[in-house]
Each structure stands twice: as C-alpha cells, then as structure tokens.
Image 1 (cartoon, rainbow, N blue to C red):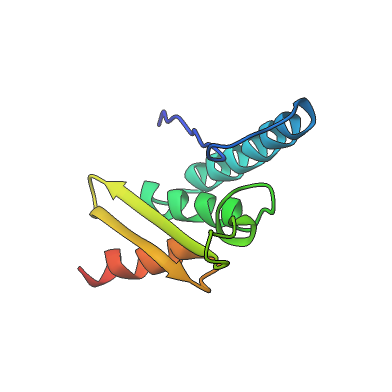
Image 2 (cartoon, helix red, strand yellow):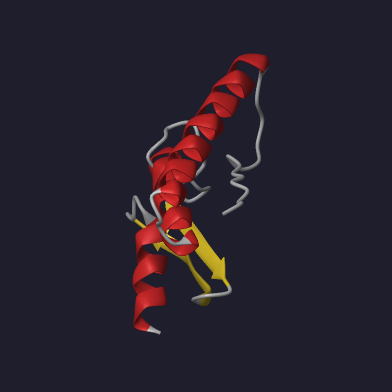
Length: 110
C-alpha cells in the first residue's frame, strides 16, 4: 500500500534554530505515523496518534505548547477530516492538553 504522511507545526515566528527543531519534530512524527500505517492502523487512528505527538511537544502551538491568549487563558482546538469518519472539530477548549482526543470521541459517537 502506498501512502503519504505530512504534518506541520503551525504558524508563527521562528528562527533558524527553531526551524531545525520543527523539522526534526515533523520528521519524528511522520516516521512514527508511517510505522503505524505499516502495522495496519487506519488513517484516522494514525492522524490522531500523530496529532497527539504534536500536542505533546512544547515546540508547537498545540496542546502542551499552546500560546496564552490575550485574556491569559490557554485555549486549544483540533479537527479530523476523513472520508471514513467525516469532519469533526472542537475549539475554544480550556485546560485540554489533547484536544484531538475530544475530536476522537466525537468521531466515535457520531
């Protein structure tokens, strides 16, 4: 089976040093996702697992590394778009380290 794995770390300012760290993180996440695909995991499960890894990184503006808003809160969001499960998203979530897990629950419930 052929597949393409791609990811991104979001938008924002970066330096040459942080760009190298972002590239390293993306490579690690893509390699982990590719391994899951070769093990027979579904595309949805792999996308969720990859997003979870990104949310665990302090480098990204997601989950653990989310930016603090103007009102001094951390709000997260995530989405999953799939030909299998459809489109699910959750946003403006406070105190949620892994918003992709909220989306995963939504996808399973609908």
